[in-house]
Image (tube, rainbow, N blue to C red; front, top):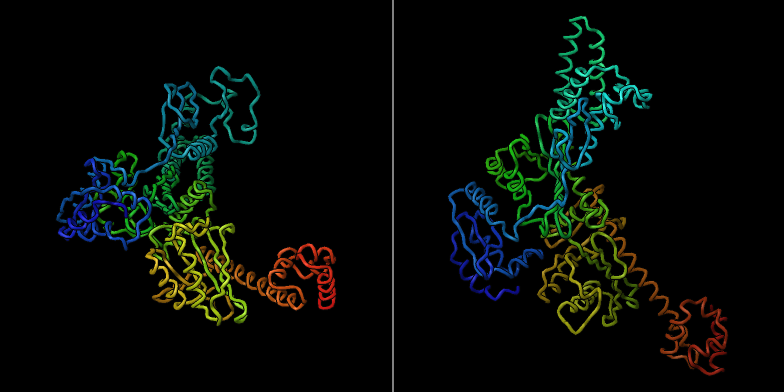
Length: 607
């Protein structure tokens, strides 16, 4: 840890109170670079200065810049949360969570014409009134398409009454998707009343619109205005049909936001689905840079920042989240909204949809598939890692008796196999078959590249976040000893098989961790184990074949180990050697005509 003030900071922290409070990290200029809160100030602040504690890159960079810190002691956790939120908004420190979306906004426009049109727009002007803002242009456009279809409003560019009866009605009129205003058969008052109903539908959703239209239909029926009653009945049917096609059900009581979160290798993606009056009103996606899976509670910080900056009219009644957070009651109190954690029930379906949205956005940003994003996040979370395991190295030992013993290293970068980074290990210094000794040997050789700057290898020079070994607790313990010997902080786990040699569970020093077989994280685990086993056993078999061939060739007088290796490297296979002419053998091995002829006879006699 490159911080020349570390001893001073440790000494200061050793005298710190264990009460709850807020701490303010400062750089050499006295500027606040990070604000955090803690139930126990001493323990939390000390965690930044212990080398044994895992930190992600963002946190390490922040720690390297800490020159000093201040703190404020509070009486309760709620006061602590309130103070932290207030100070972050006031100072906006560099290393606190900053919400980024990089997106513009969309609006729904009702033009101020004599016969208004309803359209989706990116910019405001003076030619209409606006509903919004919408952070999702797709939802704004979809809402406009839906409302124009339900209420049969014109979507053409004609200006009314100027363009009445100038052309034949378009296709939309003939397929009953437009009222045919261009024919001049709809009065101005009736049209404007329909537009007002459409605006009510946009603002309050299908449920309230149906209630209001039903009352109007009954009133028209009682007044014997059956033509209007039929028109209203058809409109109600269109609204119900539209709601069903959008899979909007009245399982959401009131206005609610559903928050989905997925952690990536460099940032966290958060997606918010905003439901108002039982229908999807808007959605928003934001990215938070450099956030770890554990440690700083991402959702807590996000909710307090995002919702305390919103206008009252934009706020929902309830916020649903799919993972528990500490002090959820205090957060609800601070933002003035109900914050609820749900894993099951109808609302869990909407949370799953929000998480899928977050995953899709992250997969685009990081150029990965959504499945890779979710499986890597889930695996990293199950193993209790501090951040996403964006580089996984997996090791296996393969042997054919004591004659051939080899090891292999396969690499998964961001959930994908990176075959350019695979490495093979030939084990020559261990004479008797011993998997534990072989594993210690190859890990010692591999990890030495991380501490010896004189050695260089493109793959070995990179530090993994996670190491898997093919085996149980004993194999894990061997590798952990090697990792510890080099003073490295790398998570180590094993992958164990069942009686049929299928992936069964994850092993650690503390026991085993099982995953559901249908889970994406388990499928990733299977692919890692399959790949490291395939790579190791292929290398062992090839080496065994070459070793057997080499020993055969040396039976020919005049062919020693070096000449045998030259021949194997050049011709590669038995068939290649057998197809070679006497002159080819003589030229490649650098042997006499007589030795080449004897070798040719030997090959054709025995192969």
